[in-house]
Image (cartoon, rainbow, N blue to C red; front, side):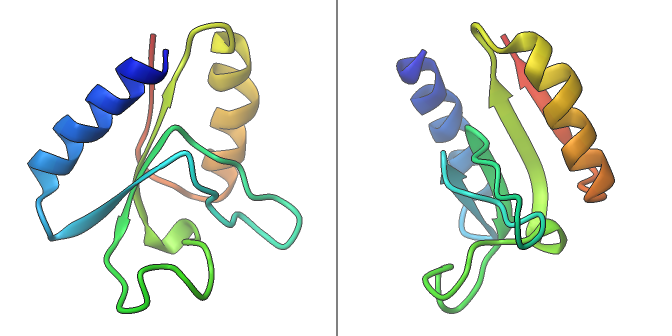
Length: 94
């Protein structure tokens, strides 16, 4: 599945250009105790490049999970986590 994630990452990165940052399998800080690692996250650009802290819900434009064996978890638990954090756009690809 890693190859497909890389392909999706490249396509998204080409589409958003330099306007947004595309992160692959890096944390999104939901709160102090919750930092899921989506397969792909499209987030605001930031001067520090997220070296000082991970992006939070307000930074996220799009979260993508590439689901192979985790479809149920992605469609339920993760979807609810991102919805509670008010992340507007969440995709699950299988």
